[in-house]
Length: 460
Ligand code: ARG
Image (cartoon, rainbow, N blue to C red):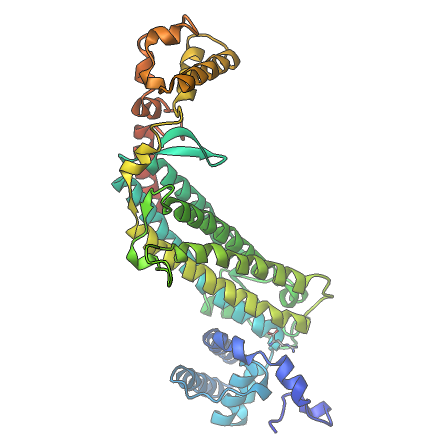
């Protein structure tokens, strides 16, 4: 049996059942790089402050380097009896360089060590997610530019409402993702704080230099209160929450891809690479990737509920419950990154069917709002112009005609304010072009927004 680091006070070893119940090594081995990086910075600080010898620190640093190689070449003997990644590495260090390896844990506890590992890890992952968000945002502006001539209905209640540019719609997705990016960066501010030095929760008796460790590990700030430092998992709650929001956005985008690729809509072709066939119905082409992004959103919402529930009602400071923070965090990282990667590729390869989009605009009185606006511009109160237009729509419907095919004299039966220029405003192009209000769908607005978005995301 392996001797536990706390064995001094114990007469019996841990029960087998308890051992495997409490071990986290299966999943927290993912933190090996951060654990080693943190330990190296800690050892260097211990030497710098004279708490341990320079030579001892050198040995420790070398030992840790060779352990990293062992792990990366798959030769590291991970042991469940050693609970977690911290004890596995520490024990191996002692095996490799002798008792001096035990000095690495001077002025440190696993309570502040695990907080450091998680913060280092999350910092790296947030940066990767932000990079993926940049690529996806660039892909959207690229598609907006490529498809600038495509018109599509704006839907409300999933009913055709008004004509818009497809590019305007794509830029709506861009704005959504831009907020996600901002939220990740804001969350990063609170992740990127150096916790080591809190010890078990009360601080340490050794003359450590926390700023030194922060500098080595490139943290702009250190935590302020040792109790809070080992009790805090807000940064994980926040990360998963920001991710839940992003997944919600990706799910809504996916839902539209699913709709748009149906025969009923037929606005987009997702391509062979991102669809699957049916094992029974040969004609089918299923948008599985989009469906899976939509489906995986549920996992991340679940992870948010998990971490919130784990933390709820915990007394200060560290409690072992907090070991349950890791799996929801890892799963969130994996789900978000995989979904972003797939969505990015899918968005880059999508083929928009301009002709079908336009067809969807050609019936259903889609420019009725423009008729009402026309009258309102002539001084008719909007509530009246809305009612008059409603009557015109109903008249056209009865006659089986479109708004554009009615004669001006027919319009004039409903209001004397109608003039020949009406028809400039109620074509699809006329309708779109007249929506020049800031943030509206007029082509010149959209082109300006594309340029703005391109410039913006260049700096990300
Ligand atoms: N594996 C533990 C965790 O993830 C490390 C901290 C253990 N600390 C303790 N006092 N048992 O939370």
